[in-house]
Image (cartoon, rainbow, N blue to C red; front, side, top):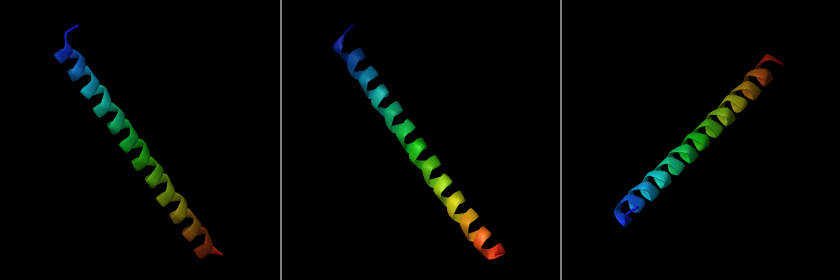
Length: 46
């Protein structure tokens, strides 16, 4: 395997890793927002 191919594959792996991490952070933030919304709705019904 030549060096250029290695570098390209490493860059793709890094980009994929960052994309996955960003998606996880986004879904975690969404879950937090939903949880906060549920808490607010529950306290409004009391």
